[in-house]
Length: 578
Image (cartoon, rainbow, N blue to C red; front, side, top):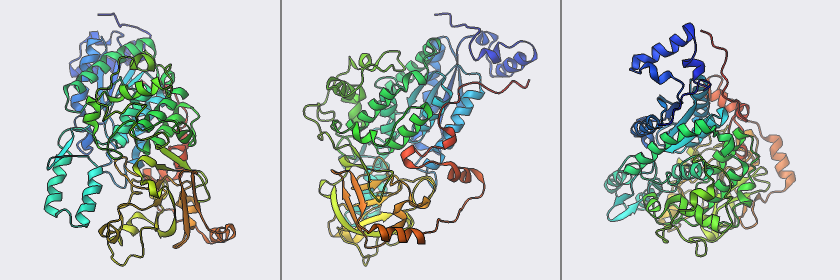
């Protein structure tokens, strides 16, 4: 084994210290049974795990951490596991997004405050992956991501069912009488039948793929199911690799370049990924000091077709995607078509082009070739502008109904998602298939936290009439497992005085996705008059984290991060007090 000892390592400021300080650091660690030889200058590797039974997608990560430890020991490092908070979207109220920035702060400070030379980041649910990447980027010590993997395909009455996506479908079936309460209860257990995160191309799977596309995760590792033995092989390989990365001083700042972000944006389009990737990539770029604007997400994807036939846009699930060749096969297709940068370095120490060279597309129904894509170029995320969203809004075209991408209809306005849900089943609700449902006060500051509430279910009376989609406009987000013609991330949000706050029932709303426009057909003078009448909502929070969040969160077009966290702060720690 290579001699990994190095007296100049960051961790040696703790474990190599002389006198009382060194004795304190080493002796308390030895109560865990470590011998004196592990403090000899070998790389100390932190294993940050968001394992928690309150975050079902992350509950198995303790076992993944054990595999990482094996790899670190094999490579001659010292692995030290530590917990982080887990922002599980399935349970947290009002939304896990409220706590993404808090988790990023925690990860950053834990890495900086402790005697670590590198870190392996174990994540699962959709907010934990970007939060960990953001925190690690701000410290800029060598880091590698290991996501926990998707669940096995759901199975219900002979068909594959997808987590999240089939929640919406089953809800519609229940409302229209196509499914009973008993059948729906039974179906719940069929969707989530193993460890892991959502197996649709929701935000968890999207961000796992995005982490790999950025070069922060080992090739192929985004797609292995959580219960597949190769998930543990991948984790063990990451443990070995991080020790080498410390020797090579391969830091996030060398990996997370402008070209890497461009690759991630194009990959997200090719996989039919979540609109939430826009928020998270923008925030991560802000931590790295990389200029990444909302319009980049439109411009860079216009030539990129959707290659992956997965729910919610398609038919298959992540288990199928894995066996079809996984993300390396997608990236190889894009690279062959000149749609990716091949030069960016990755956590392997090799370039994107070198990593994807051995990739093989095994199933062309799941991962379609570039010359015969699942959906044509230009069906990815579109960025809209107009007097209703001067700083932008987004729509996922591949999950929308083509006939609604150009639409004009009267607004039906609700001041909160709860206000809509209270009347959604009312047979007398004044809506039809042409109505544009407007949900406001669901943005970063207004809710707070920008929850995944934008794809509200259709009114019951329309579902019963056979209507399956209608235009919805909101300043909140949508789950990556969701679908429908939903305009999201309307910016500025209503709570800070964005134009969405001025919309009234009956106002004509014009959606023109081919023209990249979203506007309100109301005279400018009338809008100016309404603005004079508008008053900002009263501040609801006067203390605690939620107060901090509402005071400092930026708008969706800047990633909904805290302004004071933009840019990196390095790994230096305050003066030793011992």
